[in-house]
Image (cartoon, rainbow, N blue to C red; front, side, top):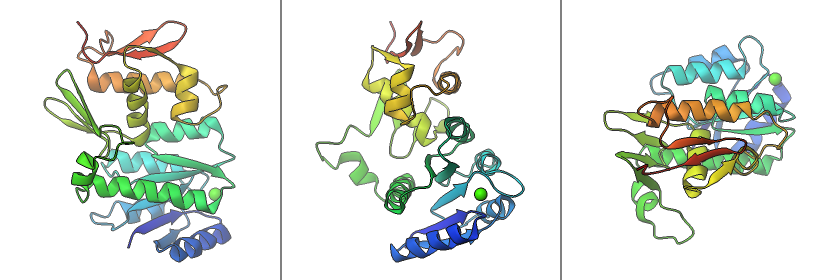
Amino acid sequence: MSRVLIVEDEEHLARGLKFNLEAEGIDAEVVGDGESGLQRLLHADSGIDAVILDVMLPGISGFEVVSQLRNAKQYVPVLMLTARGRPEDVLRGFEAGVDDYLPKPFELAILVARLRGLIRRKRWASGVQTSTAQDSGSNSEEPSTFSFDGKSIDFPTLELRLKNETIQLTVMEAELLRHLIRNEGKAVSRKSILEDVWSLREDTDTRAIDNFIVRLRRYIEAVPSKPKHLLTVRGVGYKFIANPK
Ligand code: CA
């Protein structure tokens, strides 16, 4: 059975979530603040498969919780709950290392679906389903790995394998890369990145995308200030080139 940690200070919301998740066959624990959440999650073997994390918490915020987790190399999937899905909160969450988000108020069925998606990814990552993820042969699936210029990206595990190291991508970093790779050689607009990759409104501050690109360049470019794979297309957005001449 999957086990989820709910970090939420609104007691009746937390109780309702726990009740409904358990009705769906998902075990749930509740803590009411970020410090307690961190304590629980930073335990070597927490047994937690995914986290539902509120942003506005007493003490440290949800952003702080997730960035401390990632700094400690703890990659448990995190679904963030944001008040009204404010784009600036969403982007800040992605930058801190959140994997997915839902605006409050949310539909319970959607929350459960998103949570199951995150837990599945974790299962892949721990190797339980590598064979099916790798060659299930299901025709709607894109290839689960993409290799270019001595690097490879494994989408189910969110791993970027470089010559000497493996980098753990967040879901959002991987989705952005996947979108650019799908459109290889073509300019991709910031608007399309916001809408198609992250489901945000197009009037959202696009600087957040630029921050993501800076980070991805640090991972994949030999000289990040002189990119050969992730090119800026002036006035439009970005373009991915797998094998530059
Ligand atoms: Ca709250």
